[in-house]
Length: 76
Image 1 (cartoon, rainbow, N blue to C red):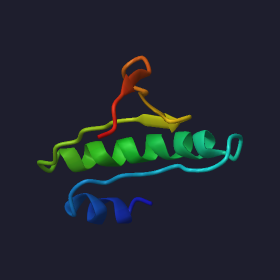
Image 2 (image 1 turned 135 degrees about the vertical axis):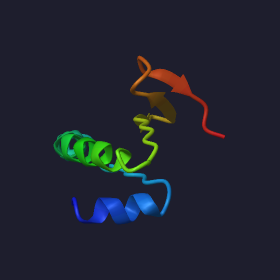
Image 3 (image 1 turned 180 degrees about the horizontal axis):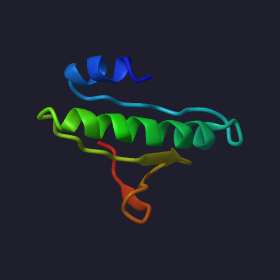
């Protein structure tokens, strides 16, 4: 994962989707990736990168902001 991150970040916005049936391991997989990605992004940020992070949950026709107390978001 680490060797790809600098290349992907140079291209612009990096988006990760975890899609699948309930109980298929999306949260487990994302939790495992988060720490590694955050450490690497902050190393890159020292080289004049701006880092912004958003976490959304799309479920049952609703989009929730996971970093803002699950506030409902409108998708346009």
